Image (tube, rainbow, N blue to C red):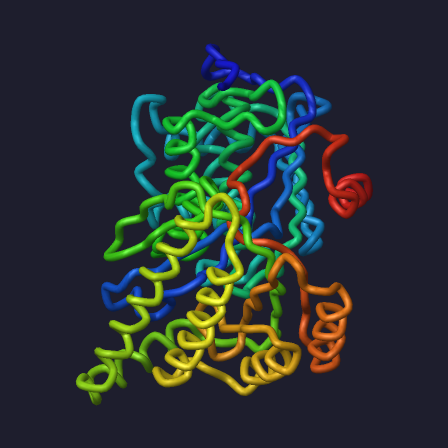
Length: 405
């Protein structure tokens, strides 16, 4: 159920609006998905939060990104001159950022053409979405975006940002409903529109994204991704995990190229490994859908075995790393099961936590991993997609951050 908003093309938000979108992890199928196999992507309940307020003076728009120390304000009269190059009619689908449009924005914002830093890309994505979605009637807004997600860790932080911005601007311009209360979802048509615009924001940031991250940010839960097709998996259980960021930087492009080279060199060895990873994804999906009312002990055991097997496969195809081995060794010593998530070569790992695990065990593992300099979060996967919040229901860390902004 949603409360429909019938006015289009004018400022529809006359109060604070709080929105959040989840990050994402790949549960199974990373790298194999590049070669046509199935990957399972799931919503990560570390979220990006956005606060939208109407502008105080009706003449400026402000974006505040406290995570990266960025706060910028522009005069709407200056932005208005760019509108003819960006506006899509309400009936048209987003066409995507053209090189010319991005050049306009870089010149306007004072960025160099080759800029790739987080701050510049986030600002360019905001400006592109603001001009493209809002069109002729540019609203005066104050937007603050604060995230629980680390950037550059392969956890979908840019997609959660793009989804949140898209929702705020679509609601502002009357193109989606302003929901009356929490826990009410937008319609499928509205979610599809949100996702399509978030994908454009991802294109500004990443150039040629897969569309998986913004789809997870929009719909949450779990998604099946294969050969460019993204399909939601209906009703999956929420799983508790320990997420570990090794903080070891890696190049996804280099790692993907390395797997391709191995496949060309040893096709008879590598093809069966990739097919086995595909079978792991399929079996995991079957278990999750069978355990929607709550996983049994036997089903948790199967999920743990699948995690172990897949981690070995990922080492075989060359995307492991000593930092990830340390995560697996530390968690194994406490009876837990871990695998890398994403590109590998460093980055992040996930550890499945059964519901009956003793808090002292999790604390001991976190302490051991923190001693290596890693970041750890106890959180969940299968998290809900983009959501509206009341101010009273925001997490304490989010409220504190917004109050400081």
